[in-house]
Length: 113
Image (cartoon, rainbow, N blue to C red; front, top):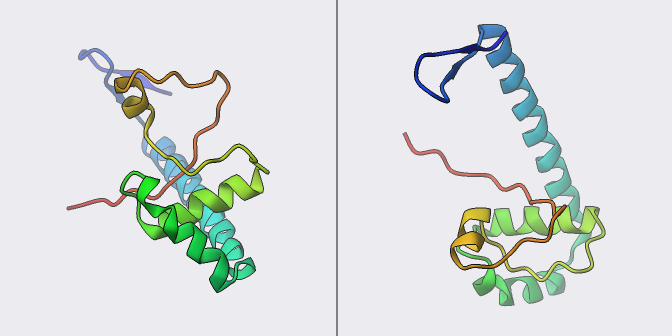
């Protein structure tokens, strides 16, 4: 059961819901990491030279995230993937419209404590 607080938009969750959400995110992370390792196993050194050459267009993403995105594009058989990544909000700020129904790519975000 989700309980809404007095403050608009704030929700509180039960410990069971928090645990379920945490397990779901861990499963997604594990699936993404397995896809990433399979992608790296299939590639050869000469394949990475072209990838690294296009690294400038990857909007300051790490090599690991770049390879994860490419693994996801390969899994989706996305032939239109050009390697230019940006967040939805940044595309919006640049007045670039996103095609309806487009799916985003998952990347790992560093958490600083």
